[in-house]
Length: 340
Image (cartoon, rainbow, N blue to C red; front, top):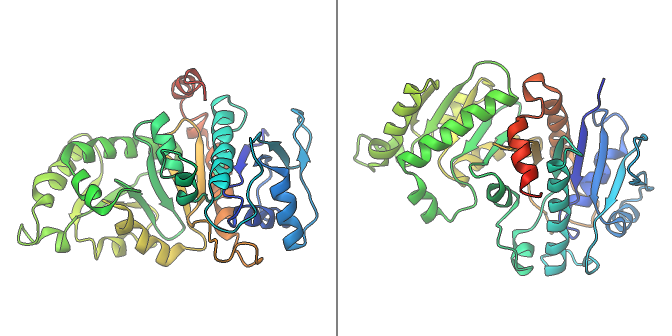
């Protein structure tokens, strides 16, 4: 059996990313059997290992096929900062780790990447133009979708890291139709079986027949009708305060939320410790935990690694599914031509 090749980027050196990575590998049976490559800095991992009392278990990557967890040292112009908070140095470091992991996926050196949390503030201080991982991936693969999976609920976001005013303006028929088409195609590649999509309305009571807003009638409803004509099994727009109840503990149902907090508040309420962020619409698998850098507890040996462990398990599971075989060879070739 060919083992899945999983790349893991360390995230912000000042956050809990290195800690939860180390904790995930602490128990030999916690993770699936795979070939693992960590993208980061040995100095960061060694510091974190000392703080949580863990002996180093990784080996320097030498390009071989031997067993064990390998570390690919990412070249940096400066050492990552020790501070537990946003910093330009750590922003540049975490971006470099992630960038190299994506490049490795583009060269078919890994089948999937799992990304530990980064700080948007650190990336901003570093002068990076991206709000997060997904925005960078959108630049390479327009239409990349942020979704969240757990055993209890699956949610896909029409828009994610946009200010609310921008997110509301984005709720337009053409944007929704394009999003639903990519969502349906992407999910069919990585998750077998039939499914039903439930799309939330934008306004209270899904507009209450126009009394509380018109976007449902002018934008969302027409987009749903068009998606149905194209063969999608979808209902809505449904009142946002009840749509998640209809999908809870129903794995065949996927909620389409129209902006970040509409989808993430209910998702994190029921699945914070075990939820996984999955980017759809890519020629490789990408997952991450559903939480951030948690600077307030970083360095205290208090971080919970379960969400990262779920992200690794899900990545491995998606890689080995026959429907996912390299996801899309043509898309991967396009990715390689872009030089990443």
